[in-house]
Length: 251
Image 1 (cartoon, rainbow, N blue to C red):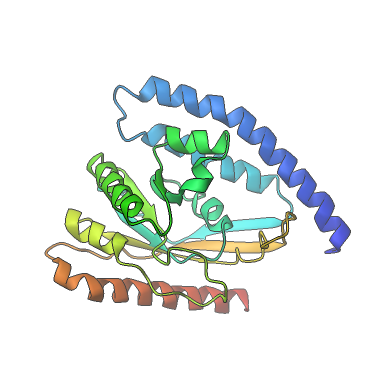
Image 2: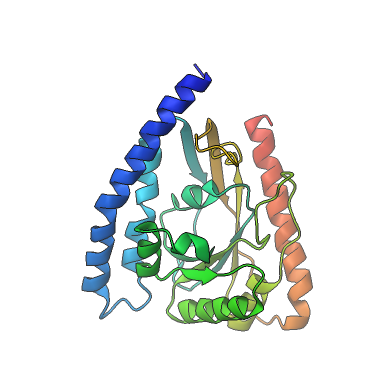
């Protein structure tokens, strides 16, 4: 039954479950980071544990059904610049179901949330203040440091969620970063998260969503002159995969 009352009750349950999970997870992530800090400079272990709280939460959320498809490269510590289309804040929770760790470039407001933001900092995620050129430069510098630590970096090249559902133009930062490090691009396509958390509504929505891992796009030998073509190529790959997901979902 998909009544407003049922959605309200199930949403309350899901938010309470998330709060309990976060309370349990925060000291666990802190302990793992403290123990592994001397040899895990990229905070891979702490970050991997942090992302897995999303899997537990989804299992306890009757309104959501998430799945993954495609195959991750065996050498995720190569590392990769991971990019995806952006439908909803819940994209982060969906993509975190992938069995790997990558550092997220995230708007700074999220890192200021108590407990969740603390875990993001322990995991060495990357803060970004939208519209601030200095912040963008610092975020890209931090991303370079994470790549040098052999940990992949995750960026939404649209910059923000699309209000219309259409794929927005991709910004250049992720692709410049990949070319600078000669790191391959790993495209992801997500579909189905738009109704999982509706804007201006604290209640969760009924959602079946999927993240699909696509074939890596190499950048070896590319220069900054090749950046526009690379950006267009990756956007086209994601757009095609997203359309495939839409057809499979019957949308």
